[in-house]
Length: 121
Image (tube, rainbow, N blue to C red; front, side, top):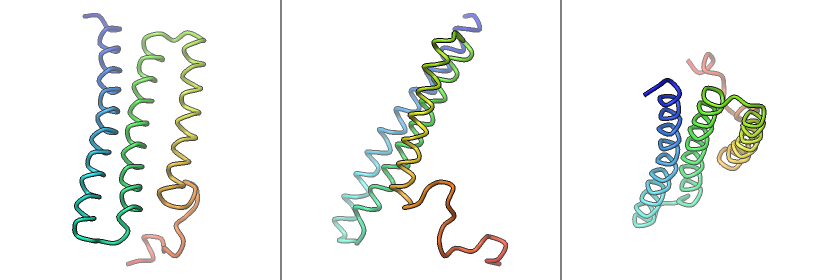
């Protein structure tokens, strides 16, 4: 197998890991939610959404990494780079939206009421 074949395989492996992260994360989120519901715990829905959102974020990041590997290393044409740029922009928007849903603040905002690590000691 030549270099491009190995790079294509690496991109496919990273893509598969992204899909697995989303699927396994969704299944785990459902499993944890059902368990918490059975125990009649509070905040089941918000915890479910946070876990699922983090799983989707991880999967998106891995899928973009696979796209970057294949686009830059295998077929660096102007068209493929433009498609990659669009994919990265969409992923960034989705990540920011999910971060806002999960934490209630934008990624560049500090957590309210939390002291820096140096002050906690």
